[in-house]
Image 1 (tube, rainbow, N blue to C red):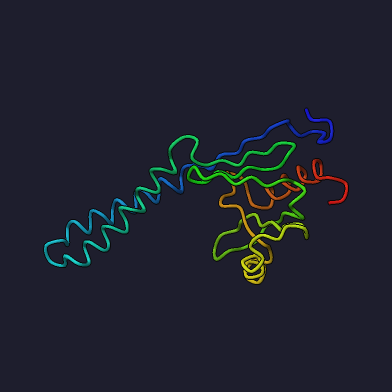
Image 2: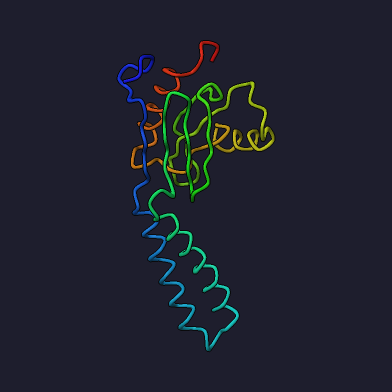
Length: 163
């Protein structure tokens, strides 16, 4: 156990449930099959539809590869891996976490600390749309509110005294 984060492990790794990607793969495969079926009658529509959904199926397959996606929490901050692209954020760079709605989905939003100046324009747009500077790409098998509470506990336990 970590000294500052009583009740928190030294490292916590959360992985997304595969169901969304399996559903995307199945739906995409169905549309690719449909595109092949209509290919003789409507070749342009078949190529456009088939090509788009083949790309969607490829993304779903890559997302299902072990190690492609995770949320890793440790004393230094959080690491978000999405489709093998990794972003690392220090706890001191984050001001708060909370649940937010984006369309029909409830996600975990986050606000950056005042000293973080990257992507200021995009953060203002996001704030206007969701109430937060950004959001996590998944809820990793948890309800958004519960995950936000967990992340906030990590942030409070490990952020510096000025945060």
